[in-house]
Length: 170
Image 1 (cartoon, one colour):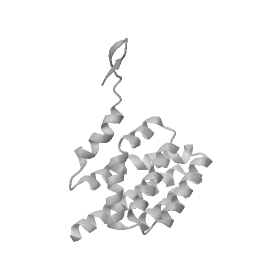
Image 2: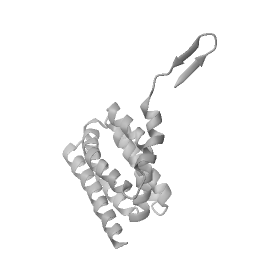
Image 3: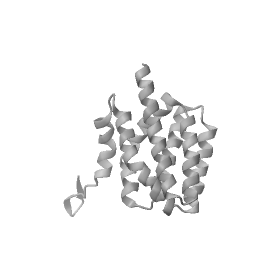
């Protein structure tokens, strides 16, 4: 927080909360309910993110999403690698919004999303992600804001329901 410049003195650095929040948030949220709370958050945020991406995504954004989906198919039996690509997919959708606040928010909570996605993939496997991600790409590629919103909402809602089922089976 303090920067010392030789021959000039000491100065208070500009505080950038993102840097500190990235390391603090996982410590705050980790616990038995963390994955469900992250899914609730995603349910609120990601449907509108997908809708905005549908009207702003470039050909390059869509190409990136397709490449990531291909990687997801290739590593569908490796939960760790699949979860990384799953996170990358959602981060590219955020970037496709061209909204700096959406992009920065996703970067700040990236570590939490990563932990959550690993838990989800280890619990549910890869099929649900592959199924919905194909439909999301289709909606974004067709610039169909309403469908992108609806499909992302279904994706997160179904994931929540299946996670609750698995939790109740234990």
